[in-house]
Amino acid sequence: EEDLDALVDAFKEQRVGGGVAVIKQGDSGDHFYAIESGSFDVYVEGVGKVASRGPGETFGEKALLYNCPRAASVISSGPALVWALDRDTFRHAIAQKEGGKLARLIAALRRVPLLESLSQTQLSRVAEVVREVDYAAGDAIIRKGDTGNEFFMVEDGSVVVTGLAGRPDLTLSAGSYFGERALLKDQPRAADVIARSRVRCLVLGRREFTELLGPLHELLDAKLAATVLSTVPLLAVLSSVERSAIIPCFRSVDVRDGGVIHAGGPSNTFYVVKEGNVRAR
Image (cartoon, rainbow, N blue to C red; front, side, top):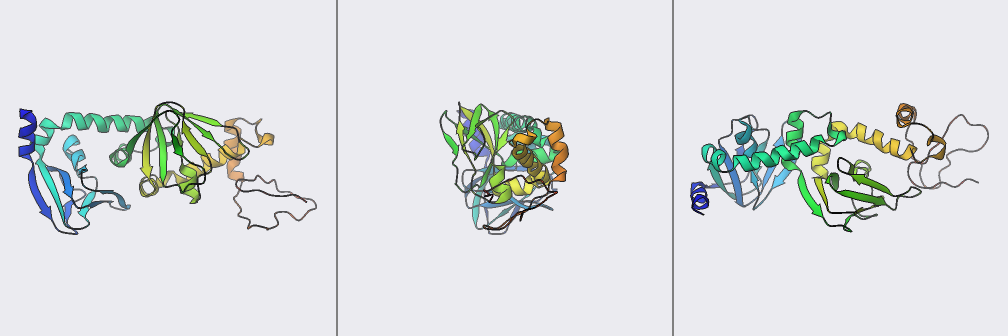
């Protein structure tokens, strides 16, 4: 309790107006901040806004933990009140615990095959904004038809994806991900995702998904196409390597409701319905 009192006493009140850069990307870090009131936006050069922080949240720990330059700028969106803790006190009292958490998140992200091409810096940025969310067995994580605004990576436990048109239920475990389709295509959720057991997911919001995982969007779309092709009976006999090899041969074509895909007669084109329904007559 005495240690806690000493730590509280070490925080210094700091009031800022709107548009103030409390942290600037590239600067050395000398303080850790806790927000009492107001809000802040997090910006990365060349990317833009990647996150927001509000009352009860903190920022500025990474540079102090790893003795590296600030990885982003943090700018107040209006008048705000924060409490600042100097580097030495932070490292002594908090660094061990917070450093362990950040390292654990980075390790969890490294277990997601999709992210294996990201650099340590890119993974650190994802780790700083990702949220850990726990679900009990039977909880509906995603509901079919809902608007999709989050991307999920399974850290622990397993989920079942059910309700996909024409496809069997799919079980996903640690290292798997889901929810990307609605974000990539800006469409409603295509299936229900239910927790089979106690599940912990790493969750990214739409903005963070778009900005931080932007380099992976092409890979995500290719994996989505591979999943669709795996459900085509004619192609099911192919290995995953063979299916991956033919994906570049396909091109995506949007057809409006009532549009004619093929007017009859000989054809040298093979079609796979990726989304929606067609009728032959």
